[in-house]
Image (cartoon, rainbow, N blue to C red; front, side, top):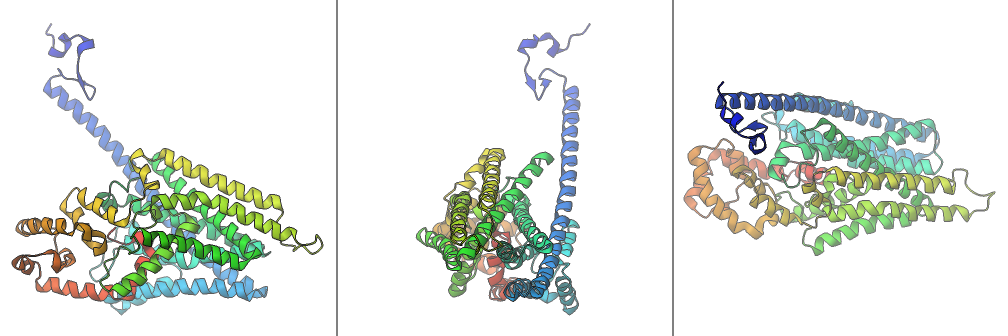
Length: 523
């Protein structure tokens, strides 16, 4: 009987490679490896299919929530008007109109070069309140960016979600919460408030998840993006649910606390919001991290856009706890966690002020709408406990290499430098140039040296990604060689530069970063 080489070796001394004895004949080893790889590929394919189905369902569910919330807001305008609460009716109607108007403006900006039929069709989607569903359908069907369109469908969907969140969902929820605390507690008002809270929480979580699972984001900054695991359906679902619970609990607690404060003293409520935003701006200025990321050449426009964007992101974070706000281009991880974890204590303080205000009334004169003290404290305690538990569980479940993002003090400049120096290829390095020069001027000489050696190679190899749009991103000041500069400045590139210049001076260039934060391209 013939003994194989690996059988002659004592079992205790055998070496294994992936569960296969090293002495196994080559043919048998190949067969075993192919079988193992085949099982792994089939498993990953199944996981990918399940995640795609789940992603499709989430997109359409979110679109449905947005449409339902808009309908509820319109119903609340009617109900407030019937009850004679014209201030609440006007404020709610104002949020709806502001959101729709801005969406119409952005629609014209994004589709202006596609012809009037396309513009009117897209605007009709907005007016009929079905724009969220249309965007979700295009993303699910993997529609590509049209020739004359500024954005791809995925980025457009995120920007319109951000618009809805900033101008309609959050303000609408605040108005309805104040009305609810003040005694407007009909069935429609209760359902509308619940709808606003769920919609805001869902949109906030969805934007953070979409940005985290985006292939381009993970390629450009793998050290930051990747919290949602894509190798396990159960893991992805658990993390996503925690995102949703964090956003919803933060929103509910903040809005309830603010509504209690408004009933007690509107001036204190306004001062509180102003101090929160002002403190964040001061910290950004002290750390020289105030300038926002978009590459806008006009200094005045850049400063105004940076101010409005910083304020918008701060308010979104305060009221939704959007995890994307921990990005160094936004608030940063440490300030994000500080804001998040102090919310229960702020809510408890406003709750105590509200109860002191109510108890100052004589029992016979106490407002009918007043909450009992146990109702206030139980609500704050439950929401606060849910928020902190979800935060702690998220930190526990995420991969340890991403935990630093929750406590990071990294600035936008440091993040930009890290992304450039740790980039895996030239395309990812090139992404740095889509940001404002302020973020990369500290290592500008390194970029110059890299471009001077790389551009000739890209031209000689005719790199597919190095097209006219990419060439137009390179500022003249970064190319010292006139001959080399001439090679990347053809007529088609000059046309792209002119279009980019007009686009950066347009309404969309000012508004998109403000409402979308890091949901826009280039980050």
